[in-house]
Amino acid sequence: MKRALFMLWYILWPLIPVYLYLRTTGTEINQYALSVILGVYAFVWLSNQFILAAKPKFLVEILGTKGLLNLHSTMPIVIVGLAGLHRILKASYGFSLETIQARFGGFSWWLYACIILFTLLFMANTKLMHISVLKNFKDFIYRKTGLTYKRARLLHNFAVLGALTLSIHMTMASSSDFSYNPWGVSFLMLWMLVSLFLYARYRLRGRTS
Image (cartoon, rainbow, N blue to C red; front, side):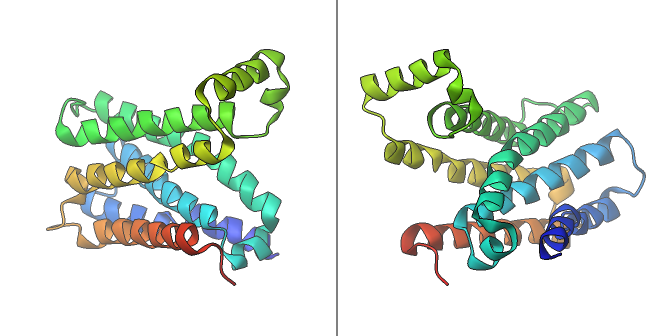
């Protein structure tokens, strides 16, 4: 029951900032509104990734260690997919991909895409590693570069850089103009800060009870 309630919360929680954004951009569901919805969901679920990575005790009790890790390892693909659709819809609606704001978003997208690929190839213990070509490639890279799992985890922390650049992208968006959407942008920034704080505390102190 607790697991079902958590998953319901996980899916519905981004609807709060979605409402705050649509209230300022207009409630009509069109291509632009859909791009905003996808962007907000991607941002909130990315923030959630840092909470999952922190392995708070209450989440371990709800999901179990395996369930928490499965959610944490599955969601990046969903998030990158949503962010990619967000970018495509914004571009097709007439927004330029050459602005500074769009470049920050594009950098974040490519960074997370690379992190996902890196994690799948060099960190995750999935069925992909049963494929001899991939397993041999992983072993070759580990042997030739001196890469270890511990060092790979350090590289994985570039996800924090992606969160920071994505936050800049979000605050520079026209729909995040603080003068007319203070609650929407404040919600997203506060949630990202809380998530990064929990992750930083976990990395510095380890999981606490």
